[in-house]
Length: 279
Image 1 (cartoon, rainbow, N blue to C red):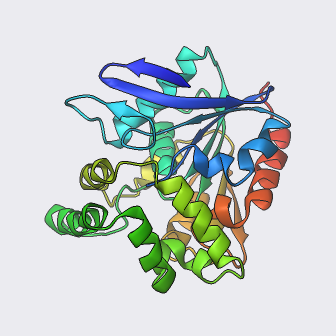
Image 2 (cartoon, rainbow, N blue to C red):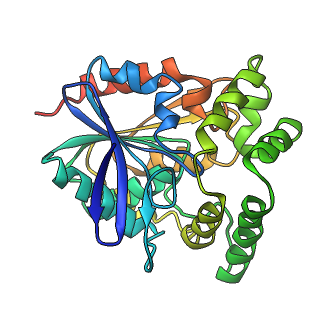
């Protein structure tokens, strides 16, 4: 098990394969298992060096005391700190959902070390809920309470009955039971109370920061599922506003692209990197 010690945080990461480096950042309630249990990590490791990190508040990453650093700026700095720790000058960044929010916002400030960025099912805001700060806080406080009330098993059981926007693609899949089983194995290593704290802290800014998107100069591939209702428009917005960005829609797929379409996702990442290698 490998950790990066950064202040009061012990950030967990795993490495696979050899070649051009890719740092992968998962989404909410996910962890490195999002890439490994789905086979994405194994496929990418055939061609590249994959470094999969666990965000603060997730998996085996631990933060002792305050500040927790559950914000996009701190976790963007975590990404760069990990690259420094591994002595990576330039690297590719593979993201999903919340991980993409972190990466794209860091890229607005400085993308000089990002050789390419993959933004799957994400946006350049940190709240899908628009409106005044109090409205945003109230929504995410209610959302966070579900993680405090329900066990992971109860949550997955509830999602099977009502998949909502995040699990619609899995719920409508012919392999629904199998994919829900994978999802449970991924999420159950997280601490639910810490996830609740993360939700209340991180998701606060509905501004997509369009001017910042204009400043991103590295190659960008935006990927979204046809059934990912919350992130279709944000994906299209990023592809429109980031200079030269490319975009792919996955028909019949929802929010959880690595679970629902792992081979397609890995293949698109490999193809894009081969067109944009580190010079």
